[in-house]
Picture 1 (tube, rainbow, N blue to C red):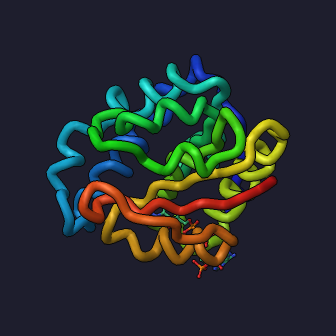
Picture 2 (picture 1 turned 180 degrees about the vertical axis):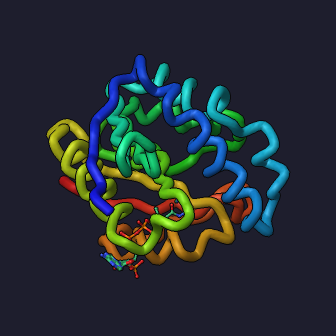
Length: 182
Ligand SMILES: CC(C)(COP(=O)(O)OP(=O)(O)OC[C@H]1O[C@@H](n2cnc3c(N)ncnc32)[C@H](O)[C@@H]1OP(=O)(O)O)[C@@H](O)C(=O)NCCC(=O)NCCS
């Protein structure tokens, strides 16, 4: 198996629509706290609004031949967009805005590898390339990852890569992971 990695433009994001929806369904299937929160989450309500509200977006896909078998989506956004919930989720704030030194924050928003391609190092490559992109923004001091409950594999994956558990929001629906970079 020879996997190729390709950065795609925002205009071509529709090519990962199905994988994005698979990720939402997967997260719902393993969540035990408020799985119904995923009912409104799909490509059109999660990915598209994120892309539009961000200052910069980075979408990288992994391909086996012509087939896209995984992707990661990251963005740089003004921290204020996290102050009133996010996308389809209403809550007070995703994190304490005052604890973030910079005006913008980085977020590794979505990462998904198709079943059958997991545990082969592909997610790690997408993760590292996304982190390189996020770290290239000297204006940000923090990178966040929001992991939904029940996803212990993903949690372990991120903790092994240096992210720290910060806090939980929405009754434990989301675990907030954080990495200080400046
Ligand atoms: C979580 C996810 C993105 C990780 O991607 P992945 O390609 O499976 O991850 P990797 O293979 O790079 O790493 C997984 C483990 O295999 C190990 N590994 C790395 N390279 C490897 C290789 N060549 N061969 C075997 N194992 C390898 C890693 O050390 C890692 O162990 P760790 O989790 O204990 O650190 C992927 O499993 C996935 O898409 N899961 C479903 C969706 C999901 O949960 N997304 C996250 C939403 S927050």
